[in-house]
Length: 165
Image (cartoon, rainbow, N blue to C red; front, side, top):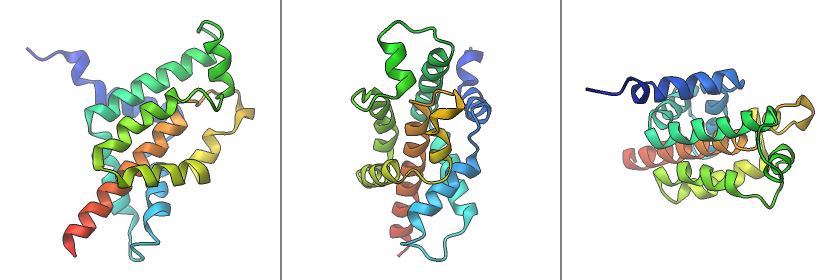
């Protein structure tokens, strides 16, 4: 008999993204930002479809649940020191947030690494908002996860476009 809790992983991951202020459209805009230079006729519905397909993967859902869970614990000041302070500050040498993001990026091949690195440095759209420390919210993991989903969706889109040529 299937486990109801496991069946709800995708639903919960999507709900958590929305609760943290991230929509599929926000991530699709990042995909568009990454891919429109290579596909000038790119439509947002194609970007959204690729984001939806990435979020449908269990590895991605697990990363969302884990990352947001840790961000929330940090906001609630429920972590031990020094981890509490490290996550609150999003310390640059921490790196575990990027490791989780790279587990998403790996799903669609090496092009995801370059997409992720570029978008992580540029911080367009929702990534700029998630990196705003003045809100009191902790998004140490979420900003990297969102960037990784966009990078993976961009990779998926690029692979599909190359196969159509």
